[in-house]
Image (cartoon, rainbow, N blue to C red; front, side, top):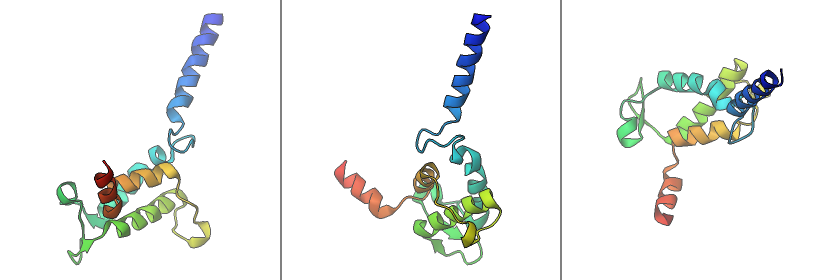
Length: 120
């Protein structure tokens, strides 16, 4: 019986460890929970066809460039929408650090990126 209890405990501990966010400590990680929905909404909102090669997004309707700062703000609204079903200011909450980290990785601030490159 002790072996079963031990293996059950270690399996439970592993499951908990895997579901705890290493960035913000949320259980489950909010990016794991909502990230795919945010990415899907962003893919619907903007043309990402050239994003991989030059980190630029384009508006589907006007074909104008969308700055990453705007994309990050929209992505934050997407997490609010995914989580609460609305982007109502009254229900607005701070974006978890892990979600913001991934949003910034997807749509980096060029000024910050240039600063890091100069330091590196």
